[in-house]
Amino acid sequence: MIIDTHAHYDDEAFDEDRDALLLSLREAGVGIAVNIGASLESSRRTAALAAKYSFLYGAVGVHPDSAAELDEAGMRELSCLSDGEKIVAVGEIGLDYYWDTAPREVQKYWFERQLALALEKDLPVVIHSREAVQDTLEIMRRTYQVSEGKLRGVIHCFSGSAETAKEYTGMGFYIGVGGVVTFKNGKKLKEVVETIPLDKLVIETDCPYLAPVPYRGKRNDSTYLPFVIAEIARLRGISEEETERITEQNARALYGF
Image 1 (spheres, rainbow, N blue to C red):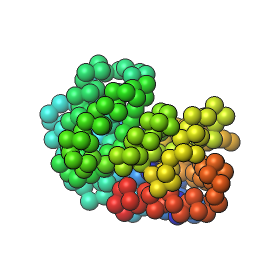
Image 2: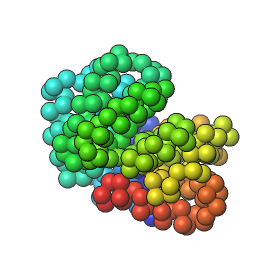
Image 3: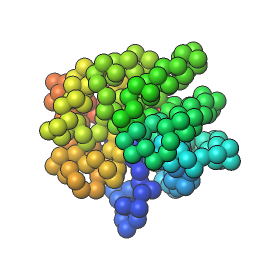
Image 4: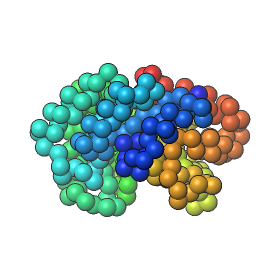
């Protein structure tokens, strides 16, 4: 079974055919998809989608680009949403210094608050980090230590070095790999895939973004994950069937399915 560990099916890109597409996933071998919140509003939509479809689960959280919208009332709402029966993680949360739409200190503050929420609820975290490798790692390392190793989760759309990946996997975190691994200019991610422990690798789409070759530039969805599986299999020298089995097992361990 293919498990998409990170999708955004609440995105407006799916407004015209969302139901038909979601209902076609199982025919394509996709048994489970996890829809990821990126704002308070998308977290609400995520909870609604998870309630509607038996094979969809959700994560709730506020992306760093929307960090300025958060306040104490918002945190209380996230806390309530995270109690949902099919909510399996807090995310996506983290730091984004590429767009810098929220002041960096604001991003850090709400990142740490949402990490604390995940620990309080005993949920894994889904981490977004763009152009913020060192600050993200520092916060994650500190929180992991303070929590005595209880912090767990996945580094989504991993873009760091093999050395950084090694540090994350050493703390027990999973590495999320998607369409970028199929890109010609995805050499750094290919190196990460070649070197990290196979039991710490999960696959994702980040749809509607980052479609793999040969669909690069088009709207992404979970039915394209076999292209990601094929590239991982090639890089690791194992069969596609084995890659699918391992990544399914890892996704189940990550989210507690």
